[in-house]
Length: 222
Image 1: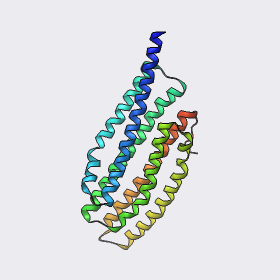
Image 2: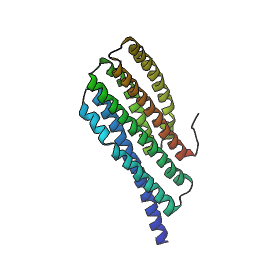
Image 3: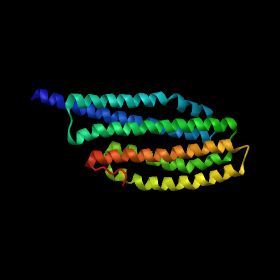
Image 4: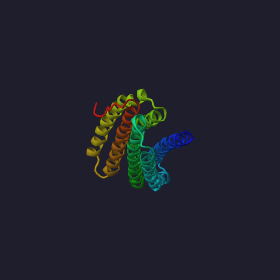
């Protein structure tokens, strides 16, 4: 009996470690997105460079989460909700790693824009960033709290983000057609907008994993 209690304690500790690592990774990529956009909007090349340099940290976090998850499955053979937690945590980490990649893409586009000369249109990304950042925060919070309602609510927010992205992308595309010599920064701005839209999609992916953990329901493609 004592041994069983000891194993259960180790199992709970391992699941807690897994959750903590996913949340730490989520906080890290959220900061990276914020830093990349801040660097662009405020003309801060150092912030952009920091995001690019820290990408390896995010990659390392994903690998650490996979290692913990595989260790849990091998040692404890989890079932039901616990098994869903382990598998979905790995999937969530994969989505968060891709968020980190998009933060790097934003930082790289930001460097190109700033080196070519600041353009007034960079401010167009701010409302997109606010929506994408809100989605990401809600996704991380839903995972932390096991909140399926908050997770499902990401779908409506993402639809709003998609609409705004399409509207702003059309505006910038028209500006590109009007300008010849200064079109390159605007093209990079389109890439930034696209990355922010994709970050919203990835936040939805995390939310879908939360729903699966809590109810075993697969809401993808709904």
